[in-house]
Amino acid sequence: MNIIIIGAGEVGRYLAKILSQEKHAVTIVDMDPVKVQTLTESLDVQAIVGDGTRAGVLNQAGASKADLVVAVTDQDKVNMLSSHISKQLGASRVILRLHDMRPLDGYEFFYKQALGFDVVLSTEVLAANFIVEMVRQHHALEVESFAEGRVYLRRFPLREESELTAEPLQDLRLPSGVLVVAVNRNGKMFIASGEDTRMVKGQLFSIGAARDGDAFGRMAGETAPWSRAAVIMGGGSLGSQLTRTLAKVPGLSVRVIERDPVRARLLAAEVDDSVMVIEGDATDLDLLAEERVGEANVFVATTKDDENNMIACQLAKAQGVDRSVALINKSSYTTVYDLLGLDLAVSPRLLCASKILRFVRAGSPSTISVLAEGKAEVLELIAPFREPVEVQTMGLPKGAVIGAVIHGDSVKIARGDTTIQRGDRVIIFVLPGTHEAIEKLFRD
Image 1 (cartoon, rainbow, N blue to C red):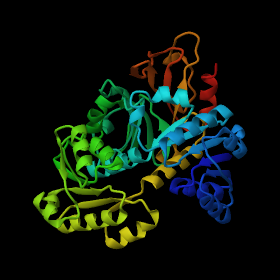
Image 2: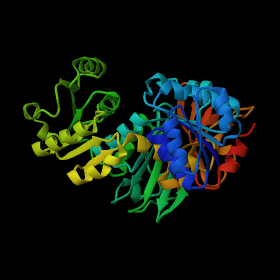
Image 3: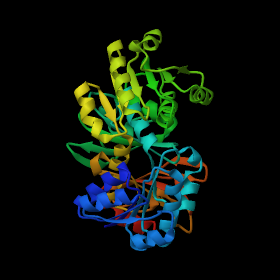
């Protein structure tokens, strides 16, 4: 595969290393000649010194014949423009990395069409979601969102007898906005059928509207919301993203400690009244004692200063916090965190790089998510049909199921009688080997 990576930062370097080892033809584009020289000396890659927003530079890198372009510089606007130009030049597939996803809120599909990217990833959102799942000890093993957060796919373990293991799927009274799409049993994945009886120690995949997800989670054995407390150090890009995400978790109280008074006031004005923003230094023992931080279940340090994050986590643990989580900006510090005995170290850049690698290994250019270590994928396709068609009459191949249909601002969880119209966005859950048949079905 011919792959162009725009940006030789930590994400770009990590991707180049792994992809070159997998024998892909990798070309790096970066403005820094020192980074470019270092990469060419240490890896089997081509590298070009230049501006990734210039058509001439991208043409020189081979964008017109590229199977994949990955825009991963540290500047969002550079990545957006690079993605657009790469697609216009003829790149088959483009992955866009952003820090701040807020400009895309409610307009992601518009930007996708305008800029031409196939997948957009945010380092901050990925890290926040990863930490949130750890904080809330969510019953789900995997959570993915689609259609601007209006549709969720979850992978649930069936660890004990529950309502879902008692009778066949067709006899269950599932929430109206939920569809069980697949079952993972003894390491093998199957598309769910009405006659399926799920077994303990198996897993199931459901697609559902956000509002019905919690009700289905309780059917799968998820416990009722509990009372917990989280303290976040830092109100920067990751800290604010994490705060907004954690504030939505039922039964969880959230406090943020931010040293910069201006940033603290801005964050306080942005979040709702359930979040307490404290102006102060989270490495100040008196402040930690005064705010009774030791009574919190989790302490998360999210600043850009790795050393301060380490110190704050150590102090919080000494105060009695159950678990400490620290943001890593320098991946080489991972071993240091282990030696210090901290519970979890999170590198947003490496999380992003790992996610991109999953897309590189995916079976279809239409893939928007890779699940269960590659055992299943989610595709997003635009309906080309000249006349409306019902899902049950489409002749879907075995190993594929339509999960949701997005028509304008309307999102419907798919049933047999759901109608798909020309131009609708269709979210499809597929097993390996079905991509070609699905894409043929959706070819105009």
